[in-house]
Length: 309
Image (cartoon, rainbow, N blue to C red; front, side, top):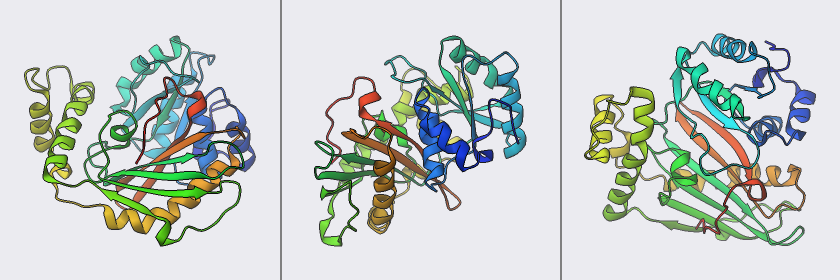
């Protein structure tokens, strides 16, 4: 299905994906196209740019909803280097609420990415993959941070929530593929009752504004946001956050596959002088895993020297 200048991601052929991946004006969209070009699963989506005419946004909403059979769509924004006040996307909203959110973003000069909906409350695993090197041709590191059921990628990338499991591999030659040995994996785990309680409370506090966005301003009490968020989740049947689950074995089984994905991303990244790249993935449940986008630290706002592991 086509939308003229705004085709659906899953309708693009290899040449179109390559052209979109090379367009650096909209980094989230270009890296989603790059991930799909490399054979990684991504959500179906459409990008509407701020120079589009007034008919583009409703046409994009209609086409993506028809292609996915969805009654909700996710809204993200895109537009190069970000500010700290940029729109916090990732919520899946009813279709009749999409245009007011998206129109404000377009008016501010940012592109809008509409994606098929997900439920951020029911992810079964979230992982952040990070590639570092001091200079092109020099050995670097590969690091993974993981949270299990009930969390989402934003908890790792923006929420400051400590991972349950971390894995690192040192001495990685990003210009030449060498399959990692099991002995190369440095695994750390932080699953003590105290750590789990702190992690869960931070997650609940972080979810409060998202719940208000999708359920309305009166949906939570202002007195104790974490407790109110917990009550809302339980009422909705979203109880994964309280499951006693340990993602360690799944992480160890998946590290080699994730390393291969990271290696191809690094190998094909248009910035040949990259120092730090990252991508993230979510297990949405029902045996479906998707990748989100690729972040180049050189383009990211206020990038701290944060230790991944």
